[in-house]
Image (cartoon, rainbow, N blue to C red; front, side):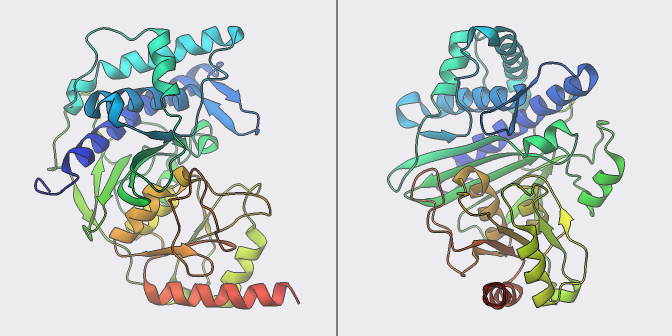
Length: 373
């Protein structure tokens, strides 16, 4: 990888996502031990936590330090509107503490932290820098600081998703999955334990770059360990199952922006037998990339527009691990139009292989016709 075009960018991206996982685990433990003010409601009724703002501030600050503020464009989910309100001073203080505690750990991840603790204005500035709207030109980093916030606050699956898009193409994808075990059967294993106990097999970071034809998974770096590149990484690959009767389907937990009944119709048409795994966040893409599931379907409800930060890192991970991702009409997803995936035909389909993908697309058309008769 040393000779690859994006080696520095990938190296930094993987390390900062490992840092963000460390930060999130710490905040999550505090959340469960204190049940405090760390959760706020956004205007769209989704949940936002101290972790969202802290991860965004940390990653944006680290990327700016690594690549220069003049050369960086960052598209990210959160803004500072809530944090700058006078009544949010206690919340801002929690974010400040969380970020600075994380940045002091930077050397353990092979990165350079600040010479002294950041102040409130620097934290707000870092979050505010993430104001790019992407588009077809130049390079953009795309960040979802805590994807699956509901999973995060419930002690379930969530992800830190960082991607780099260049001239409309996703070139780097990194997914941090703090509650997704590196051991086989990670989703089922975690759903049975949910104990937030730090151990060697809970949590991972997956990463890839465009054209590599490979994807990797690393265990999280425990508190007494240092980051080792790339010794702890192992190759992951999609499942070879192409019989729908044997395939495992992942789908969103939330019903608010996903049509579960249409997905069930498609599953029935194509002959899926297994009960679907309902999974929070982009961990669904991670499950396909490592071979634990074969299919991810999401059919958005009318009026909902998919955002690029909810898909970019996961899509590239599945593709480079040997899978196929498209809209429900079989067309590639277009990351060049700004913060939204414009022109998505009915929904998004990710599969472990082409044969299974073609069967799902065919079933979508059959189900669509019958549902509109």
